[in-house]
Image 1 (cartoon, rainbow, N blue to C red):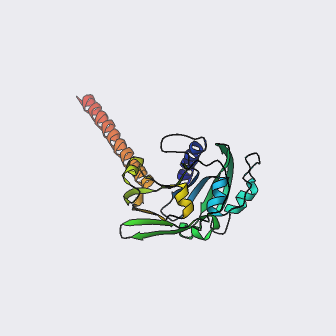
Image 2: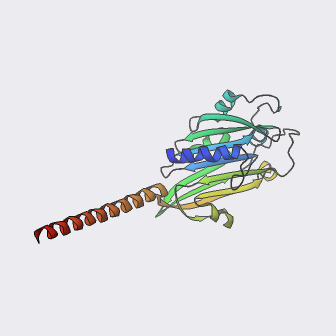
Length: 242
């Protein structure tokens, strides 16, 4: 989980700075780093306006008013989700926040109010783990004119811990390794257009497999080195006996 969290910090920083590539700037994004034991770290990157409109929060939307970090921290904290960091930033004359949330059991994340629009399922089926998230209706709160142009996008991003064998995220996701992204226009998400995230993965983590491969390679090199030393010493003894 520490490895996933470190990667999350790098990725979330790129998003906050409006980085390009796969880290597109979204109006609202839930980015989850999932572990095979069902724990997770979730980064929510959202404008205050989207948080109010989609999730029914009541934060001050005026662009000249600083974000109340304590209030945001309290909003995302519950028995099943612990907010550990709130980072405000600004984009397009709107206030945004990046919130890190630590989760002990991803299947209970929907019991936390900010994530209650989703149902989460994470189970083992034979030789695979299955993750399924169904995102339902938003609160659809009227926030007035906040500068939206109609091109704003909402995203749900998954960083999965092992090799993906199936997903319903579309062929463009194949270029992202073990990262999957589902996108929706903000207008569709506000209307509650249903969205299902479905992914299946192997039961052995990529990190474990990498460490095992590294260890096997190191052992092979060590054995080869020992054989070379033995051969050199043996040749030396044979030469001395002649």
